[in-house]
Length: 408
Length: 197
Image (tube, rainbow over all chains, first blue to last red; front, side, top):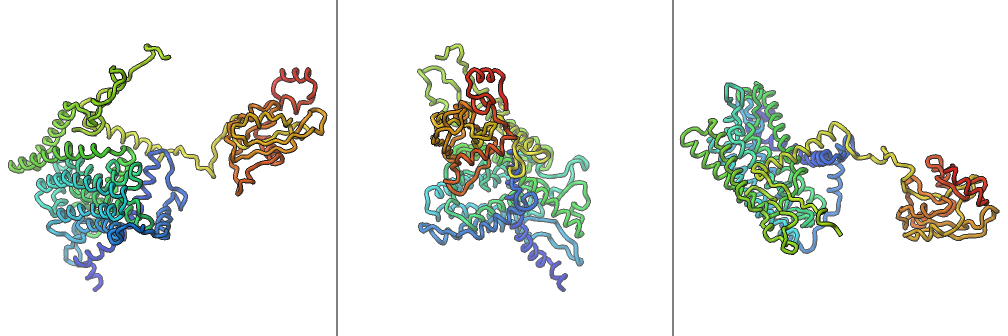
């Protein structure tokens, strides 16, 4: 009876919910540990290595510290919103996981169940909608803190998230046009074929490498990760939107950021990297529906997510933060024109029924080359400052300040 | 004044078309960081894990806690000339001179207090000392619970000498500490022989 219940779709969804929330809490915590380790290794340091073997219990120590710290609520804050903001920020990040297809289908008791909390027909739209709610946590935190620096952080975050949602949505539109469905399970299933007689899996990234990169960039911006972490730019804004937060509420913002990273990585993995599909292994094909295949598929998706998160951390410890005008320039002058032309390209290819052929890749390359040519020809420095640089005694300036910023 | 011909104007190189797309530059940077990542992951990071590992110090040069040297008879080598106290930019040395009970020198320090919290470890006292009585040792783990504790007196400074003298022998004893101190002619002769420990 119990087995019967837990192998029904409802039981699976219910247990998936519990398991995902519990596992995610642990995984987000360990993301922080790995972030610190990766940062340390990149900077030739050891990183946390005092608490437990290799510092693995550092998280328990940090978490304990967060829990037992005095929970200060400043007198001048809007109490309701101040308390709600960290919860919203974390909740929104977690709710997005409901539609992620973790392990395809499982055939049990002569039934086929989806290894997924919910498989709504509008899966991708649901995730998009939920993900864009993420800005509320930041904005409410900044507003409720009633503090200049927090408010600056919140304003920056709003402008940034709104700007980067446009290329993000357009990238997703490219995938939706190519695949022809917004159900995430369907998007995964559409990528399980092969090209060139089994050499190359039909992952969207091989058709559309450019939107994959752009989606990754916008995902960084949506998570407020470096180099787009202007909302919490420590050097300028103390702590940005979470200046007034401490103890567990600060910890929740932290967890929310990392949960957000995992959600966004999962979306990229499902949309572009084939979800749970790994070529040439029979267990990770859509036909395999036994328990081991399900577990293997879950592992494959987790591996892809872990890889993307590693790249996010790697980028964080490589690139300096963008200035705000550069940030806006990237979104409006580089990413949006490129994604718009990608959408046009995909629709045209769709009209001629060529959208899943080599022409999509060719179109991508053409767009990249054209953008490079435009970026190379428009020689105006993006700072806009070089022309106004003061020159000593009207002589040649000692250094010609060159463009620093992004392709425009 | 710098000559015009010595001035070199350096222009930043122009970015190529590919570089103006910025993604290649980002990839270049990421290559650097992943190289360091791999080096730390499979090799050994630069960090010295202090309580377990200790850096190898250059004992001769290291400027740690001070000590007051003893001469070969175990007496304090200082002749209370106040040179170190005068040279000290942080004013952390306080000497009370008294008449020496020994006949090879006139004065000796009755009190010799050194405030290790005021000290900036510049080593000027060591340079100023005409008899090489005050020296900086390779000891650096100096702790105390009160400010008073960190003012080292003569006995404590001599004790530091006793525990560091094996590691760092007294450098160049010129006047006090030689067998034939007191006779200027012989002193000049012994200076030619070079350092003795």
